[in-house]
Amino acid sequence: MFILIMCISHIFAVFFYFYTNYFNIDMRRIFLIFFACILLSGCATKNDYDSVFANPELYSKAVGELTEVITHDIFTPPVASRIYAYSNIAAYEVMATKSKEFKSLSSKLPGFKSAPLPDKGINTELSALLALSYVGQELTFSKDSVQNIIDDHVQLAINHGMPEEMIEASQNYAKLVSKSVLDWSKKDNYRQTRSAVKYTVNSTDESRWVPTPPAYMPAIEPNWMKIRTVLIDSASQFLPKPPAEFSKVKGTKFYDLALEVYETGKTLTVEQKAIADFWDCNGFKVNVSGHVMYATKAMTPGGHWMGITGIVCKNQKADFGKTVFSYTGVSIGIMDAFIACWNTKFTYDLIRPETYINQHVDNSWKPYLQTPPFPEYTSGHSIISSTSATILEKIYGKNTPFVDDTERAWGWPDRKFESVQQAAQEAALSRLYGGIHYREAMEEGLVEGRKIGEFILGKLY
Image 1 (tube, rainbow, N blue to C red):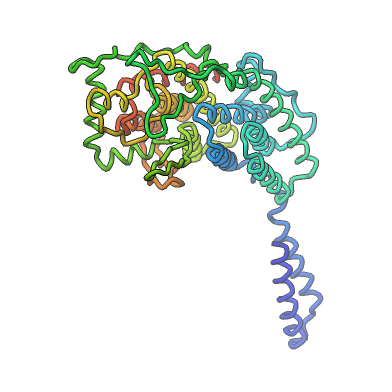
Image 2 (image 1 turned 135 degrees about the vertical axis):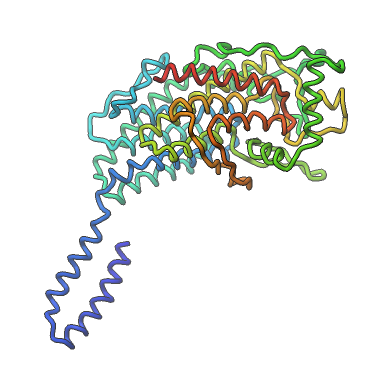
């Protein structure tokens, strides 16, 4: 911008030289006025960092950029939820230092010690953005990519005239808060589960889950229920009732549940396929082309709801503080929901529709979506969608119409919803259309998710 201004000024200088000499006008006086205008225009956008960083869309953009890193690094949905939760908690803790409405979570998170208040003047919004990124950088693999996000925020502050000492203080406080959150995260049993005993397939019980085509991958995160919860009391606090009793006999409840998946899959409409595709959110889809097998990436279900959170915040004109609170509440809900869901999955260890239908109904049938590599009951997308929608509805009310454009990067057209609950209901139903869940898993998942969301809100407010 400075170079452009100087070029324009030189052009005008030449023009004024000839013009004033020809008409005998006082050139010095005109130049003084002209350069005064130039200087004023150059300073007009300086020192406006307060208004620039008060824009809540900056935070949504930062979370979106973190989602891109998580997607690139191919984290499983449960692990991705952990990254979102701790990163947003760090940002929230910074934001809470100067908020009358939102208070530190130190009294609500067992064992968590909040960082001391900053002893120098900080820009709260910049510091919150940096705290989000510092924690995200520590918990992801692509650290250079996250560093670029950090550098962009600092450069934005410089460009808009934030004093150097304020930038430095904001960085230092973000690092202090991030360390506090990361220290707490190290006590959640995550590291121990990396070397825990792997899942063993029960080959003697026909009702149990077994790996599915095309990759026959082992069960992912079979020990995730051992991760420390954030706000719910335990992984089993909202354990759903057992699924329908397994049976191979026609006319029994379980057979009919499987038959519904089979028959639905054979008669899918264009709209039903669109719904299944939109909510697939398979972070690591294995594709087979002849003898070649390759994987494609997509964001996780948690990443999808992070995107929805940003859309709702923008539509509802939430300020920076409320936006950070919304992301924090939803991300905590998603992490706790995944822990509870994985506890349910590996407690009941139920066979997937694909396996059951191939064995007892039609050995040539394939689901529309690729079956995820873990037990069926209950539906993870149903639980985390219901949890997220419950939290967002409490914050913004039932009237939350929005257009979901989060799947554009993967080629799926936008979908319009009248409320977040409608979106959650569709996300759950997509699992039936996709052929990867029985209806019971979706319905019970929605119920469990609502209970988790309501419980978390009771702790946050």
